[in-house]
Image 1 (cartoon, one colour):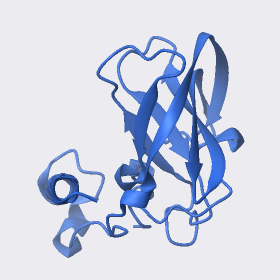
Image 2 (cartoon, rainbow, N blue to C red):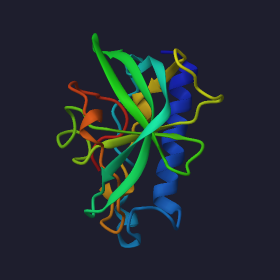
Image 3 (cartoon, one colour):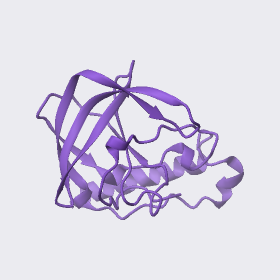
Image 4 (cartoon, rainbow, N blue to C red):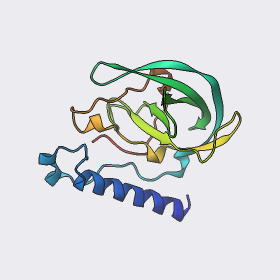
Length: 178
């Protein structure tokens, strides 16, 4: 792990903690912010920065993602990422809402879910600097995995990771359970 990468990750975490502590749009209820001492994270670990091979879905399949409040939100499965994690082949799917552009939404569960990390799963968002094509290599950095806002307040409704994005390994990276 390079010092530069770890330092950028720490700066990202510090900025997020300030947002959660001070910003009016923080998911931490205002009456609980005085007791907020920052989010709990797994230590930075370069082993959870993996190179993934991209498969683009030219005609994306619609997927209904259940939410924490019982509704469903329609997404499109736009890419599949294949990678090795803990020496095992794995894959995750990336989604966008039907009219979506920009970031690729990657909700997932792993064997820390409900134990060391939020019980409903975690998210990653990828913002590629170019249009992805089949065979591209992209870094998935699980150190950036985060808990959705509904982990902090029931006023939020959050999509749940579909079963196709449940990893059969532990991912001790990113945010821990709030």
